[in-house]
Length: 409
Image (cartoon, rainbow, N blue to C red; front, side):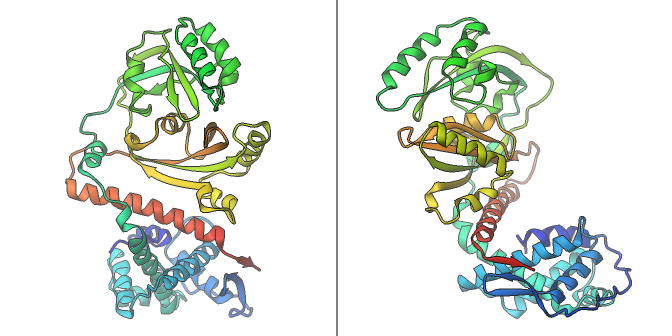
């Protein structure tokens, strides 16, 4: 049984090597049964926090166990509430099986594991509640998302790196010019003119004047990029260029893109490839107006990861926030190129939608690396499926938390 509860997954690793030799921890003198956290219509008591702290200490969890205990219990409440609303309640037998599996990872029987916990002041019910929350979540995630994470043979091939990695990297400059309705013909004519440029200085001058990307101030210059990081449609176009040459104008939604090759080289390094790219897009009305771009800059200063955008979108229509994990070949070309320039947590505001009336606040959530080695295809496909399922589960939990009413005392 694979439990998708993040805390359970991590703690099971610690349980593999625990000695369980701690002595009983003295409980603080206070009303341990007083509620200290409210999560929607449910409470977390001081006793539960104290118990979770003890268990985390016994399992040698890293970090601040006081903070971790509170976070885990809040998330456990959200997991159980969501599961119960979907009619999912694990049976007592399923919970016992989950406890047995967790104990087995520490090479102990369930009874031995419980005895070790109890000798350190951790009640059996604390462990049972921990497992029940994780199991409820696993069953809910399977029911909610399992049909959305099928893995094709082609995806397995890509993930296994059947074609091998690339050792080519390129140095590009970019110009991405908005082409709103009524201006498309003018922008196309300008793009045709720029595509005939053969010097870096001239291209950089045009980028400073017309480009809408963050590289505008640098004359459109990008750092070295592995060719495999570029969108598939762009790779052959770039490889066909000589240094100084510019691609033909590339139409993308509401814009036209051009790329100049400044340099190309082969290295002894085999570039990493990815089986999935996860991103979030928050749609802001107003397009590339000064007011909307200013709002986007403020937002970028306040968010550090994709999960933060759930709180930003709270109370708005669901379509304002999109989050996906797709194979690189399935990404829209304009999104793929913007993501190729980002590290996880970084943002691009170069793209628009709805005929340039909506600004796309695009954030890279992460990349799932391909594994280039001989493995069992079926097992590997299961691993890819579980990675995507876990990503969807983490996103769903973040959304539940953003929508929840949480009061901490």
